[in-house]
Image (cartoon, rainbow, N blue to C red; front, top):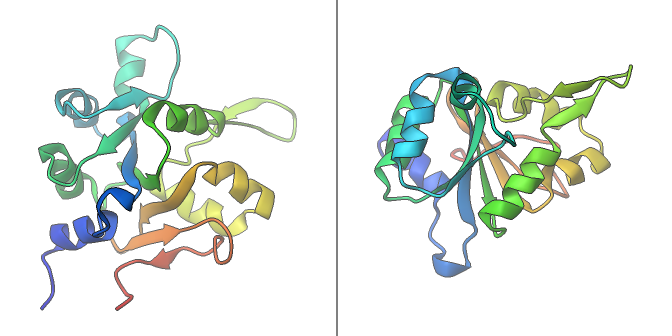
Length: 179
């Protein structure tokens, strides 16, 4: 029997494993939907803005946010119901704490172009991540993954795609197609 779509997404992101399982995080793009900023703050889940310093309300509302998800939290269900298929962000498994992950994600937030100009890299947009990962060198994958165990992104047809460091890391695989 097939699980309802939200339950299938929850099962892919939060498999059984108890305390040994990595924690689940989301990196969300506040610019994708005006509801994200308020939902993150109202969630009462641990979260951090990836932009540093004193920023304006408008920039804060459009900023990327790192959120530690909990399977039973209302925010997690809201995020999957309203954000899946709408490129709200990406998901990751990690054993690192929130601040270590924030530092990691901030390090990959900016890149330099051929002319040396600094640009924001929107890796947290699943449409960008799906195109970037298959082009990565081993060194780029190590930098992207850092303390991450697995990255998840929605596919073009709404499937749950994931990638892992090492081995087949440059491939995005369908997490729900496996038995």
